[in-house]
Length: 435
Image (tube, rainbow, N blue to C red; front, side, top):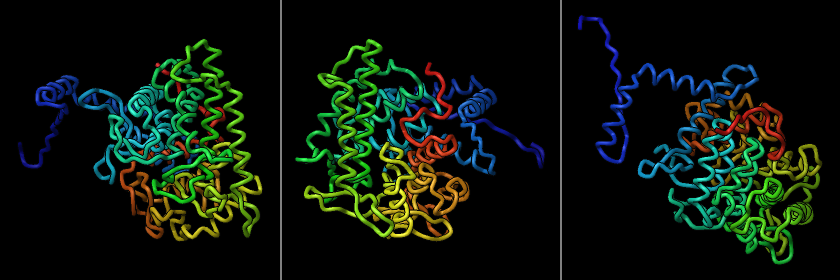
């Protein structure tokens, strides 16, 4: 080469479980050629990006960057078996890399995956339910579904049913109910949560909280709201399966009419109103939880905040009890942090959090400013979602490279932009057909 000349070189890297597979994969990539691979990738990203209608600078880029980070780092195929798996993050920069949490998978990642690629979301949903099986409510699992970190979590027991209900509503693909793993998950839900029912009340307990910490107040308000949503989903799925002539099994709908599932959902919500509210400076508001004797605990956890109750079908944002709760969350919550990048955290992460931003996107609260402006303006983890950030700099403090959090912020922003206020309302535009 002459001085000042430049040279561009294409490097192909193949990955496999042994050298021959890696070498032949890289050979295949070379045969395709860099230009073709580059254009194919660009075309796929353009086709799957969300058409963000809000024109404020940087918003579409921030939403879709997090959407695609979730797609590529919260799920994938195992190299040895080719089986689809969903994880909190594939990145080694995340402090618990490549493990399975039902809540992270079905409440944070799955809705974003459904927006990006409905066909892929079905593959991941079916495969992950098959792997987790009866252990889906345990704290954390290895990728093959065996127990990594035992401990029952009520929100994780309910999360798969909400995911199946969300998938069917968004795609109209009722054939997913013919999948054995899906039928089994629906069929075992009642027997999974029943041992945790209060001896006398229509409330269900948990061993670990949404932050994965143990508690002496097991009857958590928001966890019960998600259980009620799961029973509603089960009722709708039961009705539709019968109407479509889908053969039911694995305990799904065995002796359980849709009306019974709806009755249980309504009973939970009524008992929440009766047992889980408390007087406060702004009026009657929600408590966080109660113990078996009815003693109330007053606090909040952003991973499943009291802010989200209307989204899960409990009341509405304009209800006095919800308005009083929102006022307390902003003015009385000791884990709310004021500063340039304000927001709420928890003892588990004592800084403003991505969870709180997602919650304010869902309930459209502007107590800390426009949540869409904060989504764009907070540096976070180089523009990617993180568990929490510094109140003054907005830069990541905990949970860097948290791919499931990226999915959570992407889909809650989409809900905000499309005006969808409850999880079971018709979705606002996207997903397309399932191939």
